[in-house]
Length: 294
Image (cartoon, rainbow, N blue to C red; front, side):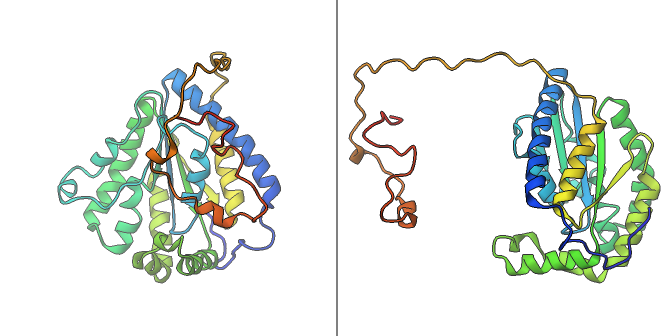
């Protein structure tokens, strides 16, 4: 695969503006709901693999992908390090357990390709285990496709300059600090080793039946839009006729009296400290004009 020059980051000026991004994301999320309903109605099985370097934008893409979908249909799998027992199993075994049943979509936030990436670079697997993975992975994926699973594999490509910028953001942001570890930071010093491992992985697993699709992700907004639009373009989904529903009229009160408020324990109104003094209760607040929720 062709690589961009190192340092060719695109996270600043020139990135996709927010307004068109949000408009198109909304349209694509509506299409994802249609895809979801088609998968459920037709009993399809979909697997989407998200791979790439640390801070490449996989998590953000998954978050936007699933934001409007039913978690009973669309499931994200992000497995922790294998247990002692799992280390003695066939390598693919714990991933097989996560594969979808009919009517399900499974998103792998990192996948069996850990063996070709971090395990390979950090020395967590042996040379023989790595070679065995590259032999078995094409067979494994062809079995999935032959069995009817719709398998899509995305590699999120980020430049070294943009990765470092995102690492610095995570280190300084208390809401993102959990996203970075000492092992993530070590990937900076092993940039070329990861590049070589990725190239070797692509050479062995970029299959006609299950090709790799590269997502340029220095611009996170563009990456999310491009990835979702591409996935939708590769699946032959269609509109599913949903049952027509009508909101029934609310019946007239029959004399129910809500118990006194002092008999229940309420969450303190922390939001009240944020309101301007001249503002009244927030819209929809439980006031005397409504019956409350009982």
